[in-house]
Image 1 (spheres, rainbow, N blue to C red):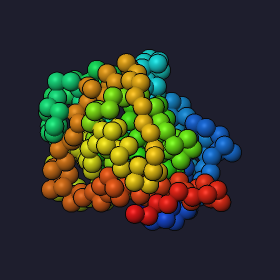
Image 2 (cartoon, rainbow, N blue to C red):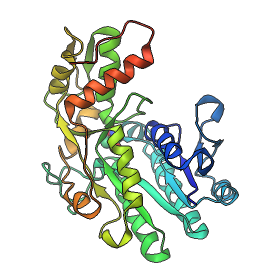
Image 3 (cartoon, rainbow, N blue to C red):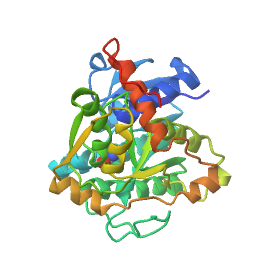
Image 4 (cartoon, rainbow, N blue to C red):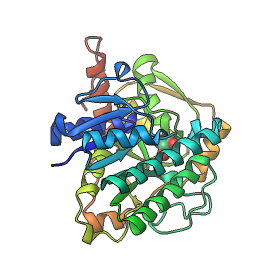
Length: 323
Ligand code: AKB
């Protein structure tokens, strides 16, 4: 029987992944953990406070729960990482090595998200191949490349079945993003409903790779269920869904919020991070090796975001999500 421990369960991916795992395997098979006190976040399964930097606490929790897999989502994202790079290094790297070490000792499988941030300005931009130059210029990116290598090392040296995905920017309405460069693509929806206008921290023509959260969650479940003999890569698979600029997203939003206005006030840090990443990932290896397919394109994603946000805002007057 599967018993999955999720770290970072109160975060942007963790919130929705935990709910999908509960729906699939039942609440008794999932333990949601986060560095934040569970009293401050909602969980559909047993939840505990856990700091992955505390190796003994991590080992005790994994052993007591009898985890067969750890989905390790606790991490600091790109913009927050640049505010305190040493803290980001400590959390992203020491947290991961602790998880891998406990997984090796306890015989657990591991899922770790990587990111488009594992690439840098020297990588081919459109598309970035599965195997190519990885010289990121952010601390977040450095920890993502090192994390991919660490997962491969624990697989070859200790037999840990550690798998990963390189996510593009993720968009969702269930939980707010926390300190990423792609966060504008979530903030813009909230601002459109609240104010009818948004000032974007990136230039109008900044084309970025993006994915709607339901596709990302399904990808995690599918890559973890893929038969190992079909995988030549484990860490980490490029996956992609859609590419758009802030101006193109604003046009799509106007179909739901007539009169929506967007302005641009590029922030030098976030613009330089965005410019250092590829604008599209080549996900053909994921498609061939484990049958990855995205479902949501830009118009479907925008319609579903408004449907979800309006449902959350009820009973206030809802903006029509239909077209
Ligand atoms: C970020 O913007 O930092 C993240 C990512 C692309 O990994 N959303």
